[in-house]
Image (cartoon, rainbow, N blue to C red; front, side, top):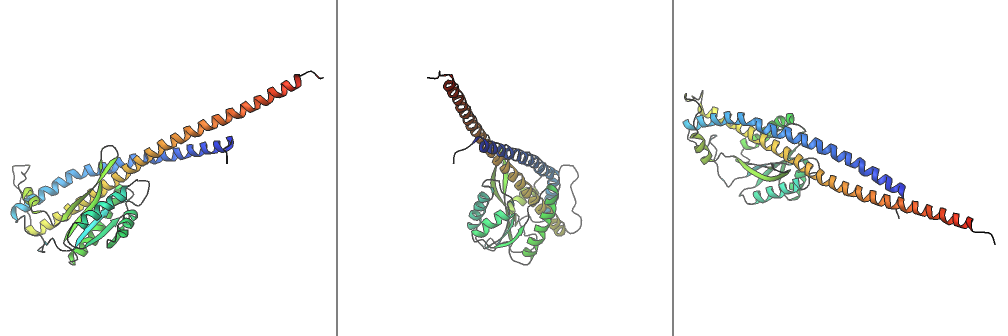
Length: 296
């Protein structure tokens, strides 16, 4: 069915409306990236404080020793937390992350127990045959990250305390320059022995050496809980920043496609309009010539 000027006008208006929506989504995504990146930077001072506290504890305790008395065998089950997204328009964000997590977990010994943050990555992991232990909704703002992390800690720590697993891994997307991101993983537990030894050697910022109050093991457990909270908070914030960066990149592509479509529609509209005008002029000239001929 051939286009008419009326149908092309409707398509041009629809493209303009869609372009307005895309620009609004770009503005929202760009604003969200800023707040999540700011929250990650704000963690720096708090993480430094927790790090110094761990350093003080590791000076008094044997860093390589298990802090909770459990066997740290690398052959046991694995707890995995994967931060994805609930919404679309993010390109291959969830697919890339899920494939990365599946590959890493397949290379580890032990059965994984997987918690997913986000419906879309949950479906991808479940389709791959991984045993899914739970689904958490993706927070809509920075204020929603802390309650989510607390909920994850409560549920995962309950399972770990019950002996379901001793190792805990976290998977998420990390933002890169130019609206790009990359999937990364981190082993949260058990704590790396070399990392503990290096932390014990950290120079104290003042001339007064610290003193650990109370039982050293209890203080260490409390600091480790804070360390886990910070690690999960950072992973969630970086994931949300990466999600919005992916959405921003997708909206950039959509805007370019809409611009090209609008240009093509406008060219077709002007060609069709010019053709209609030419036909009308030819009709007028033909009529004028017919009326101007002398009667025989």
